[in-house]
Image (cartoon, rainbow, N blue to C red; front, side, top):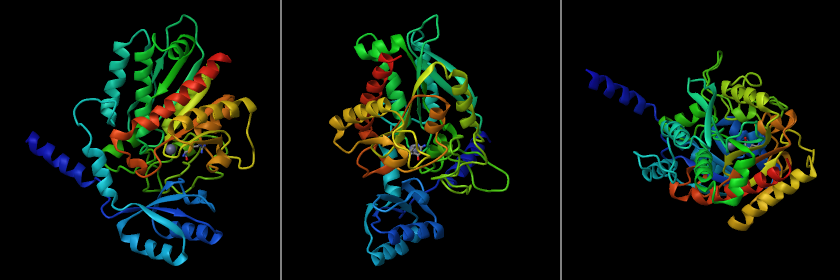
Length: 414
Ligand code: ARG
Ligand code: ZN
């Protein structure tokens, strides 16, 4: 009986898995206003999943646009692109093959830093890291996700009787950017393993705490493993719409929903019903408000542009907020560039990538956080979100250099 029940359950779960057979990812290079209009119109008429930038609102002349199109519409899109003479290439011929390749390389059993890990494994890893390194790691539950998962932060640093200044590092606010949580885990491992031998890490952890939120959007992350690899948002439900989730990085109270975000609940950049409506956003918001005096810097990791950006993102015209902030950002990006080629750019987000309001970065900056760096790490874009596990180390190695660079600056300027 039990076995039958289990089989039934597995069948239902399997039936819900989204497949991507014959779906393509195009890279477009719109050169004229007309090209931009064509892309926006297309997005209005068929369901387009924007990989980069995140939504139709953010498409501008001379940008590079990566978009995922379902199998039923690839013919129309190809014809349209040819007719409009827009420069383009097919980045991914068959998305399902990429999704399978990425998981094929996975070991299903043990936790492994060099692979992507499911939420269950990450959760177990959090407790085992904390219990085997009690002098360096403590954990605290800061909230519960919509589906009831505990949101735990790991505080890494030498114990001290007084409150130490801290750096907040979060990963995985967007569910499908798997490399981001992988980086947070790698950072914790490096911290534990090199404390006491690496001079920079030792002084960082002696003087400060690094508060790591390994996965911000846990429900979304779990859903990318169980049902839909391309999911980005949270998994919240709301009355009046059958569409699920909001973009947590559009749900903070910073120029909320004014630009680069959508008020349509079905959109991938949906800003939510009101600021901090998403319980995960509220939990992080409250934690930061309570600890604002100790948190001196924020680092947040995304995938897959290659940029180091800082506020503002919701004003288009405002330039660099502060000279020192800009210089540190340049130093960090310079370090990344020297290791990984010159593609890393940096600057205030609104002008460097695209304006998008409601972000964690702008919100924390407005609250009084001086340093907030948003990293977008990645390869050169061939695989998009589906970077094989075997290749995750170089991009996060770059982020490691940048995190250390910024931390050293913050420690030196307390
Ligand atoms: N790609 C990220 C996003 O769209 C960049 C985040 C930058 N911050 C921002 N406030 N837009 O969420
Ligand atoms: Zn992201």
